[in-house]
Amino acid sequence: MQVRSLTVRLVSERQIMAKYLVKRIAFGIFSIVAVVAIVMVMIYSLMNRDLVFSKDSVWSHQSNNAKKIYEFQKWEEYGYLDYVTYTDYINDLAAAGEMDEATKEEVIKIGNTVSKDSKAVSKYVKEFTDYYESKGYEVERFDAIMLKKKYADGGRPYLIAHKDTSLPKRLWTYFSGLFRVDDVNFASGDVGERGISFTLYDPVYGGEKFSPAIIGNGTQHKYLLYFDSKFPYIHQNIVSINLGKSYSVNKGIDVFDTMTASQGSYEKSTVTFPTGLVEERADDLHTATYLKGSREASAANMSRYVDDYTNVTTKKNGLSKMGYSFVIGIIATVAAYMLGVPLGILMARKKDKLIDKLGTIYIVFIIAVPSLAYIFMFKSIGGRVFGLPTTFDMENPSSLMYILPVISLALPSVANLMKWMRRYMIDQMNSDYVKFARSGGLTESEIFTKHIMKNAAIPIVHGIPGSVLGALTGAIITERVYVIPGAGNLLTTAINAYDNGAIVGVTLFYAILSVVSIIIGDILMSMVDPRISFSSKDR
Image (tube, rainbow, N blue to C red; front, top):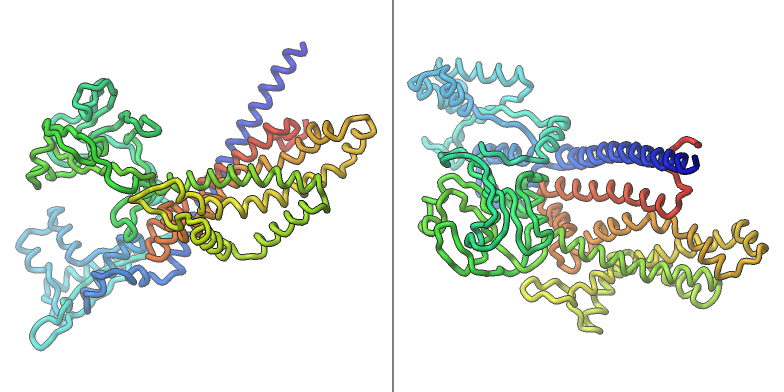
């Protein structure tokens, strides 16, 4: 009977945990969407959109009407608005068979001013205006700018319609395109028989090494699944994550690819190309993607490839931006807990003694001094006194270059852990149950290990995932100071360059980390203390 009761109770606990996790995840998703929405409002509505041209060399060389049209083209590309020209409208009518070629040639060019439009042009200009105004667009006409009897530089006439993208549409477009599943209909050209095949002997290794792989034809990626010698050893391209394209920091490349691509010096090896050609190169054939006409466009590609899967990335000997951030953040977190928790316990047990006073001075120092100030202080002391590297050298990497960034990230966390551990310990030491345990004959050592430590550790354990996240987000400043090519540095670089795609993508990355850390923290807390229940009801 007791066994059955225990089984029922365990099943009930699991159901409660499952419901809690579903609820937490649902609320987390809502929070992520809300955060991204707020950032989008700040970027696209509150900031001056002209700032995106501050470092655009092409824009600075444009003039007159051409400059205005270039601005609308870029604003559409950056996600600010939908934009269409009168010329596009006429071409679409012709492509749909609603206009013959002769009429198209007659009406595709507007006059220098409204009064110079022909009767036929005026008819289609009115149709264009009425159609797009009915859909909420604003129609603008830029009359020709003449220099004597010729167009001034960039002075040709234009007729356009544009409409700012609404927040709901922007959010839907962003999140609906967040994941993409590769399929055999991606390639637009004649690729032969489309399909997916499985092999036990990967052609990348010359077909001699046992290495299973799934290969596609007609898909975007040639290798949909493959194995190699780098963690996590098995890789897939079936599902792609699209955080949004970068427009200036890493132009044309998705933010997720920017954060996960390896960095550093080229790592050459013997590469066997699909044609059988063997060369010493850094090309990673497993990353091959389809690019129509690319094989015939280059003699080098003709000698190496048998199809248009020629677009490959290169192997490099460094970590990715995300990799550097995680490595430094996790090392800093481990170091902080190894120092902060024991020191906090020691301060509590030696309350008002010398060690407690010294610890308090350190805590006050960390709280009072701005983080940027002591980061620069640690950098200066470490570089001048101990001769440690003060910047990351990607060409000549060394384990020593991690020391100062880890210290800069860990020491604030150490102070925070010392402060809270001391406070929790003192609170527990003054609790009634401790006094009762003493009166029951338990030794101070037993009281400390079996009761005080266990209860004081609960909130500290809950904060472990958050501490990892804090190390990563705190690295935004640290990575900038030490020139670390991490995700935090990517965000500050994107903000300085007004790269909206990168800003939103990195924000989403940090928002997901935040939600995951909260959920993991709650689970860890319940594991440390079984008295904590996920149910909001008394049982």
